[in-house]
Length: 560
Image (cartoon, rainbow, N blue to C red; front, side):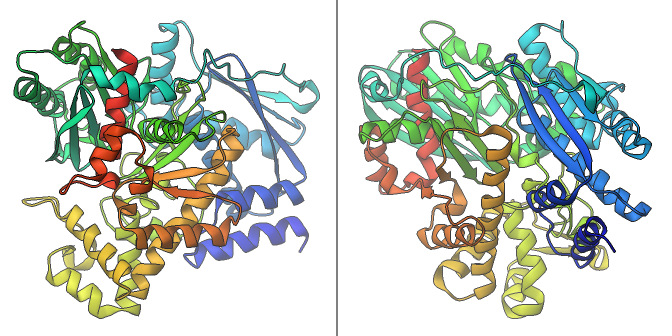
């Protein structure tokens, strides 16, 4: 058995043993032993071309070919979900008909020639890509995938993201002192609102909801709009908002929601009584509608929830006198994984950055076998694709790891979770879920496992958070490879890190995989600006919970 075959077989053995097979490890191994060039040139939205010089090993049978194909599909899917593209060109040896056949099959795998409404699986990322192209180029540009012989490959002209101005972070806090601002942080299980008036944090509140069940766009936008109206009347004394900062869990391009393939809109996508693209267009227009509550009629600034986390970090670091020259990169660990990247001048790259959709695991075959609705599954609930970060780093990851490891290692704690109704076993054991109806138990379930980990009562629960740290480390490595941002550190936001003990376990797990990775926690140590310091002093709400809502107040200053 040669080195190429040995390499593939080792990954297959691990996958079939239900172990994780990280795409990072596969790429490193294949690039080391592979004999077949598979160079991907991605023409990006801003005109630059990124080159990913992959190599593939020779395969000997259908099992090996299938694994290599899964790796190629996963990489392209991650590229399109993260960076997006106008065009992909694959350079390979066209005399190698087997590799050519694999590449040609990508058109069908990604359903390039199908209508958006008919796409599933890998095709979902192209739906998002098409909507972004429409927002950026008015429908004049179409995505293409081409295959060329390696002899035609040339080095692309060097290109770099251009920053348009000076850093804005240091002046944000001062701007808030004279304004009436609303910050809204929309999540998967709740919406947080923060109100500031002339530099005073006068109100915070949280509204529970379950948007995955919403069948119509009005159910999604109505509660947010109604609460914004009520808070304006309650605290404004007849005054309209000077500006509103809105953190929304979807792809945001030019201040508009354009992605439309997230869990939050799943109910709308599956509602056959209404045209989904028409409903999505109304969601896209929501910032304009919300602008009616502002003095200017248009002072609503919106960004992705991950970008809001990064922006929040940037403003606080600038207020502390820290270096802001490399921009900021953050992860939000809540219902799902939010990812945010903000440049040093405050601009946000206009790319999908749907990192929670990225596939990092090509193994875990047993977990792949469960339906996506099953808490044990590693399948993405939107795409049904296995191994995506949605099931590894947020609360879904906690639930999956708990059900996988507790029954054998700590059955008494698993029984306690069952007795409390935090898990429900249905269909004679064929389906395990965390109930969302008639009462949503997701927060309670997460808190249960966080308490067990933080108190030291359960070593399995402690290992859950170490594993999530390992997944974060793999995510960091993949982001470095695809995006190579100047910001190397990562700040973690969200419910999973609100307990220091759980954050420390995540940090420990990340260090096992990537010792050089620096992780910070968005806890009380983040609080530097006056608004964030006031949040830190609040007897009811914590910085870990409401940092992004307060960050949205600062973000609103950009639109005032």
